[in-house]
Figure 1 (cartoon, one colour):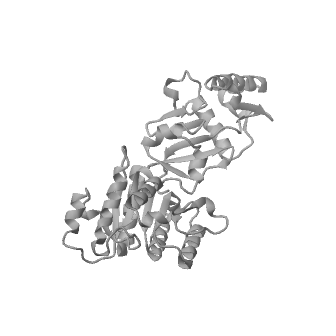
Figure 2: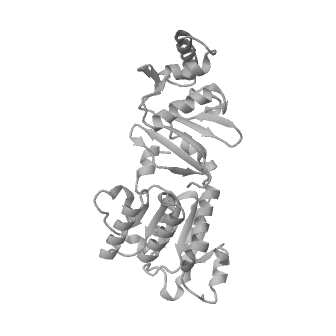
Length: 353
């Protein structure tokens, strides 16, 4: 990972688990509204590649999307409204005339293992003959083929009631199932559940993170993303369903096995790391020394014994790190250094996206 986690998550070209490719502004507006109605936070995990050409209507629609949906990423042939440049990537006009250039742009917008949702009939693309509109499926096939590992899934959108006689055969030849085509008018019953189901199945984990530049927006992960995230975070607490908690990240000492430290979820060490990281995520003042010491010292212990217990405990924790100064003491509290990027990964809570 060449860029920091914060650069990747905040950039307008940040990859998303779900990418929608459309050339009709109204259809994008409808789909985003339906997604937000079903799950208010899900649109921040979506990227839109808008293939409507430049014009006042395009500018107005994009401004409305960016205003309504924080975190949404858009690529379009348009200039973004003031303050939204970080979420709008100008689309090179060349993509409308070149299948390889557009396929490369779509692949750059999509996370490995993500979902490409593409309108079948993309009328603004000059490289697709109007009388053979279904050949857009080969664009999606090219995008899928650019991923050597964890290729994306593809679903097509259409508002047509009938298809050309060869369309089903062309889908099968390109490696798609005719059932991969969803009716645009069936948003609530088919399209939205498909998108949300993919997100829950392929990206079932949530990352909460903060660093020197501030908090990171909610970030969905798949289990296969683990190595990439650990390479971008200094201290990462990875919580699994089996009761094991692992500390990982760039700040761990080289001696830790595979750069990870396994702990039982109920252990004192796991509890302290969680408190320290939660404090950073919340922008807190640190974890009081007496709070940690009281958890460790015998019942009825006096303050000196409590503080000594905390100091011995923190000495062990600092020994896990390449730089003991990553945990600082001040104001009778322990806290993680501001220069660190820290995070917690765990299952997405039931009913939450």
